Amino acid sequence: MAGQFTEESLLSLAEQFSFRSRMDRSAVGGPILVWGRGSVVRDVNGKEYLDFNSGQMCAALGHNHPRIVQALQESCDTLLHSHMSLFNDREIILATRLAEITPPGLTKSMFLTSGSDSNEAALTIAKRYTGGYEVASPVVSFHGQSEAARALTFSGWRQGYGPYAPGNYPILAPYRYRCTFCRDKCACDYTCLDTSFDLLDAQSDGRMAAVITEPLFSAGGVVDLPPGWLRELQDRCHQRGMLLILDEAQTGLAKLGTMWGGEQEGVVPDILTISKHFGGGIAVSATVTTPEIEERVAGTGMVVAHSHSNDPVTCNAAIASLDIILEEGLVDVAAGIGGYWARHLRSLADRHELIGDIRGRGLLQGIELVTDRETREPAFERGREVGRLCLENGLILSVRRNGSVLRFVPPFTTTREQMDLAADILDYAISAACT
Ligand SMILES: Cc1ncc(COP(=O)(O)O)c(C=O)c1O
Image 1 (cartoon, rainbow, N blue to C red):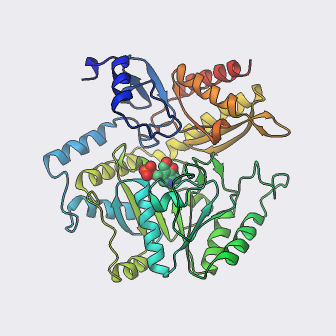
Image 2: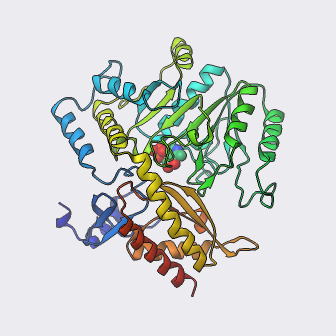
Image 3: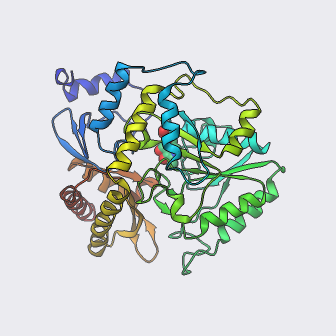
C-alpha cells in the first residue's frame, strides 16, 4: 500500500487533508514512517531510524512484537469488542494478572484507552471518594490533553485551552538542577513541599481530593524525584485526607529497572494509572486502586465507562504484554540498557560542555543542555539543532523544555550496537551544532 505513494505525494495529501495538531511540530514534513520492528522504524523512502522515543513511548516492548501480533490475531478469531456493561473473559484475566504485579493492596482495575482516560478516571474516583474536588500536581507534570488531565498538566500545552474548572492547583516541583531553594545544597530539604502546601492550605475551600504526580517527570524534562520527596508528599496528602495518584504512564511496567517507579521510593499510592507500553503498541490503559476505595465509589453508583472500555482485543494485547515483561525479564533488561546508555551519556558529557546535567534511569533518560555550566543558561536553540541533526542522521529522540532537554526512551529490544550507533550520531550532532 505504502509502495503506491511517494513521500512527496503523501506530504501533498497531508497538506490537504491532515489536521495539524501534533506536539512539537506545526508544519507538514517528513519523515513519513511506514514500518517498524524492534528498535528500528523505516520511512517511506526506505531510510531506517533508531527509535529512541519508542514511538510515542508505547512501543517500548519493541515495534510489532510477535507476541502482541499473535494476541491480536487470537482476538480476531474470538471477540474484538464487546458490550460495555457485560464482563468479557479477557478483561477479567487481565485484572487478575495485573493484581499479581501491582504494588501491595492495589488490586482493583478498570481498563480504558489512553493515558488521559486513566487519569480522568483516577481523578473522578478521588473526588467521589473524598467528596472533594480540589486537585493539584507539580509544575513540571504532564497528565494528558483531555479536559481534567490538561487542567493538571503544568509543563506546557496549556495556554489557550481554558477556562479550566475551579480547584486545579500547581505545586512546586523538586527540579534540583534549577531549584531556587536547594540547587546549591547537597540534598532537597522539602522546602518546595512546605511552601506548596502552605499555598494550597491558604487557597483551598476545604475540599481537597488528591495530588497526582509522575514518579519521574518525563515530558517536563526528565526530572528525577529527590530521595524521600514522594513519601513526604504522600504524608502531606494523607494529613489532609487527600489521596495520592501516581501516574506511571512512562515509568511503570519495568521501564526504570523496577516494576514501578513508586517502588524505588517505597511508596504505594492510593490510585495507580498505567498506559503507554501497557498494550505493547495497542491503545489500552488502566486505573487501579484498593478494594476499599473501589467498594466505596462503586457503592455510590459511580460510572466511568467508554465505548471501548475493557475491550477484549486491547485487554488481550495487555495480557501478552504482561507475559513479555515477566517472561523476558524486562526489569533486568531495562536496568542493563539503562546502565550502558548512561555510560555513553557520561562519556559524551566529558567531551561536550553543552551537556549540563544527566538525569533519569533505565529506559527513560535525558540530558539538559546549557550554554554555560556555571550559569546553567538553557541552550534552547542548540538543543533544537541537535534534535534536528539526530533525526536527519537516523536517530529519533524527543526534544523537551523548548530545546534544552533531550530525552531518550529506547525500546527494551535495543542492543549495545544500536546504543553505540546512537551515541555516535548524538556525538556528531552535538559537535556540529556547537561549531
Ligand atoms: C505521564 C503521562 N501521563 C499521561 C499521558 C497521556 O497519555 P495519552 O497521550 O495516552 O492520553 C502521558 C503522555 O505522554 C504521559 O507522559
